[in-house]
Amino acid sequence: MYLERLTLILEIVGQKGQATVAEICEHSDLPKPSAYRLVQDLVAAGLLEPVARGCFTISTRLKRITRNDHSDRVMLELIAPALKRAATEHGAAFFLSRLRGRAVEIIHVETPETGVSYLHPGLGKRPLHACSCSKAVAAFSPELLSTGDVKGQLKAYT
Image 1 (tube, rainbow, N blue to C red):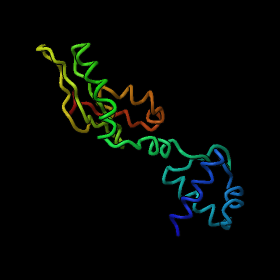
Image 2: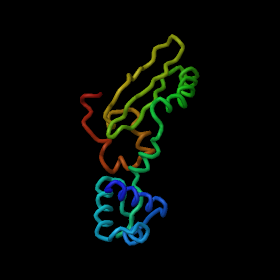
Image 3: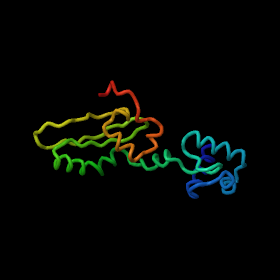
Image 4: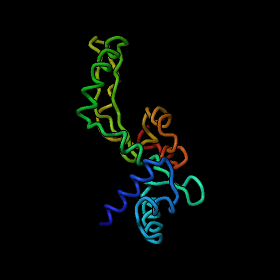
């Protein structure tokens, strides 16, 4: 019942783009006190964000969750050929990373076919602040800069 009500609120806000608690009540038949409490729970969870006093929209966090609907395997099937071409063409290692919470995980590396040496970053998680791709990640997720997730102590990683 609780999850169903939360989902209903997310659907209403998602369809309208942004909604007030009064509009949520109008479309859901929820009592106002319940709607306020549920909206605050969604804000606290980072799934809704206020855009003006009493008006809410789908959060960047929820948008990011829904955009990341590709599994690593599916993503790799799509991107591996381009990584392989780039590694061959440029003679350097190319890697695919994904943002996972506050860390970056390298999930695949394509190396050049030539006998020249290359830098292999290895697979696995790295703190976002110590990852070479953090600037690219921040370019597509600017909210990370305001949260301070790209700041941290580098001594263990440099």
